[in-house]
Length: 112
Image 1 (tube, rainbow, N blue to C red):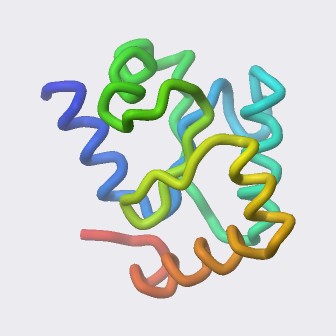
Image 2: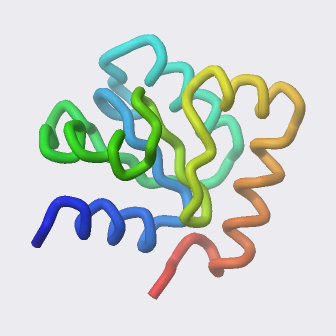
């Protein structure tokens, strides 16, 4: 499967998806750590992709997303942004609302 198709499939099949360096429990950079903490703080389940373990995704996602850096949070098939944007949205309560609403629309995050 083409890597862009893989990325599209990951985004389509996961209501809340965080592309990051490392994992939520073992982030490999400060920005990914912040992003994972705020997403976990929203209280909903989410998927993640460790771009360090997926070099093709790391190389191609910035082109697909038109967003050059990691982490990247995708909610409901739309790019939300990186750690600074996520922190700002979280502090305003916007991220929690966005994620909760997206999860309700997709019956708990399961998409078919």
